[in-house]
Amino acid sequence: MKLLIKKGHLLDPAEKIDGQFDLLLVDGLVAEIKPDLEEKADRIIKADGFLITPGLIDLHTHLREPGDEQKETIESGGRAAARGGFTTICCMPNTRPVNDRSEITREIIDRARKNSPVRVLPIASVSRGEQGQELSPMAELALAGAAGFSDDGQPITNSALMKKAMEIAAQLGLPLIDHCEEKNLTRNGVINEGRVSRLLKLGGIPAAAEEIMVARDIILAKDFGWPVHLAHLSSRGSVDLLGWAKAEGVPVTAEVTPHHLLLTEEVLLTGNPDAKVNPPLRTEEDVKSLRQALETGLIDIIATDHAPHTEEEKKVGLEKAPFGINGLETALPSLLDLLVKKEGFPLVRLIEALTAGPAKLLTLKSGGRIKKGQLADLTIIDLEGKTTISRESMASKSHNTPFLGATFTGSIVMTFASGLPVYQNKNYDKTLIT
Ligand code: DOR
Image (cartoon, rainbow, N blue to C red; front, side, top):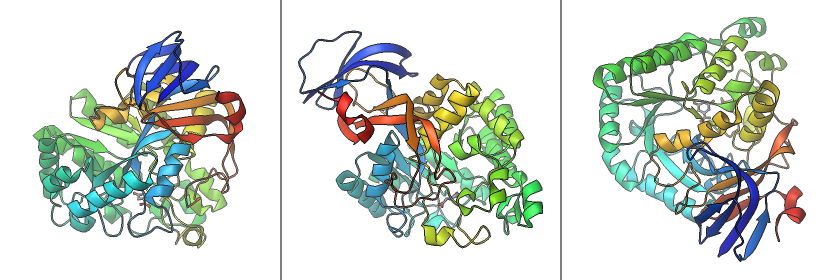
């Protein structure tokens, strides 16, 4: 199968490509990248006026299979990813049961192969059942195909356990991803502790709860030399600590979510449970600091923390609703519009944080770049196209996003995983393919 993509604007931060090129895909691989190719092909895609980037990689996705298939399955989450321009997603282990055994890891990989249009890399748990008491069989889980370790949804409170887990993950050459939260400070918390929580008389989640654990992790990484990756940073204090750590040469990396880059606690004044998330949306000052850190590369990665929950669960009101924002299908359009178009954030850095950044942490052999001989994972984007976020338009089984009803400038035209079109935007059908 030969596929020729003509005249697209290739933007690949890893390969330092930024210009108009033709792309030839043969049997799932990138066969040629040249300014002008006159190959005969089975299909030709007219991509003039469109951006072509490496397929996006999400380091932090919650699929709910096994256990909560009413919220999301590997199949629906995989389709949501393809619609959102993602070609690889890493699924967190807080399923039911928790992914803490090699059989579960293998089962997820097997089901993903059968049912998901995009690659799914399972992240296994650090501790058994995410209970924080004893370590999961990390070496076995790695052998079964785990791409990293995390107790996400829960912090690893026990520092001795954390130290041991960091050592083993380092030996296995896999990332250890920590959800930083000092639980004693967050127990009755619903939203950020501050102006809005006082106004609404809701329990607060102070930034200190995150920062204390960020500091703990940094100290462990510094003193023992094992890497740690900090998930979903939300506060200026965390950014300051990260800045100090990287300046000291501590092996630490970090991610930020689209919602923490784009929204503040103020959106909770409407009482919308779809904006309830952990860590919570914080203040303008925090958002500013997170954006700056992402731009300079201090924060390495944008990850969605796609956390689907059903309407029934969310509609019980702010206090009782579960934490989580649905993110795979809103991430790119919202960031392109609200960050790049409206705020002048550099597009190349945005794409880097969604492609090369996660590919580097995951040490992927193929992915995160468009390169001759590598798998053809690509996202075709129309920077001027409109995307409206609606229940009907979403492939995800859940629709818990504060962006419901919004229209963004920036749309995903097509997504290719291993050279196969896994998503094709209907608005472009007629003009695109010959
Ligand atoms: O808001 C969140 N939802 N934060 C987490 O850490 C877990 C996630 C979930 O699994 O729903």
